[in-house]
Length: 147
Image (tube, rainbow, N blue to C red; front, side):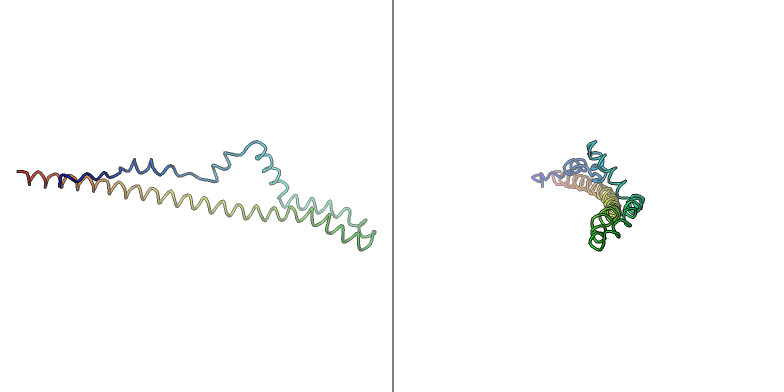
């Protein structure tokens, strides 16, 4: 039995091998450059319903002239002015809502993974203690054989 030389990893060794768990949403926000933060703020302003209302108001100011210009001008106004100005903001609002949902889900997943990581660490500590107990018992048995 003395030829058993199996090395079990300690909890600390296992933790150092797997690396740290991190929140990817937080890491992303921290890694943004000034230009990216500025672009994000502008996007948040343009991608708001308030901005959509302002764009709709601005577009509607030119509607009477478009109607006076005839069918082609009215269709052009709808396609080039109203849809581009107003729908741009509304689509961005929808994307922001979906992005926020995905971020919430990612944060929930992160928290669940952190809880599982804590549970796994407890299990590993328990197994490490069991290993120590087994080695103690094994040494005791070997010493009894040698007497």
